[in-house]
Length: 184
Image (tube, rainbow, N blue to C red):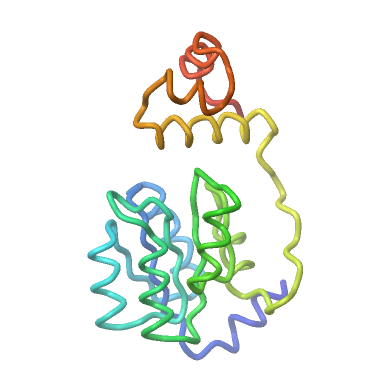
C-alpha cells in the first residue's frame, strides 16, 4: 500500500483526535496507534485547543461538532501554531458550506462519519491537488437526505414546524421521517 511507504518516511507521527463520541474516538485512536502514530485525544474544543497550544501535532482528525464548540476553531488554531500540520474534519452532518469553511481554515479534507482509519490516513497523506479516491462504501441517497433533514432540524432548534417550512415539506411528512430510524 502506498500509504505504508509514506508512513515509513514520516519523522513526526503525532496526531490529535478530537471527537466527543468516546467509542469512535477510542476506536480510531487504537487504529492509528496500530499504524505507528503517537496519538493524543480530546473530547472538547477547550481540551483540543490546550493540546494544540502545548504540543501542536503533525496531524489532526477533528469532529466538526465538538461538544458545544466548533471543530473548525481547533483546525484554525492548529494551522496558526503549526502551518505544516495536516488536519481533516469529520462529521455526520456534512454540507458544502462547512466543507468550504473547513478548507479555508486549513483542513486538507472533509470526511463523513463513520470513517475508518484507512480513509483517514488516505486523506491525511494525500498529495495536495490530487483527486481523492471514491469511498468504498458511500452513503446511500436516502441516508444523505436523512442526514440533511436531521441537520436542518437541529439548526431550527428541533422545531418541527420551522424545519418543515425551511425544507418546503408538509409538517406531518416531516414528523413521520423524524420518527423513523436512520436509513443505511
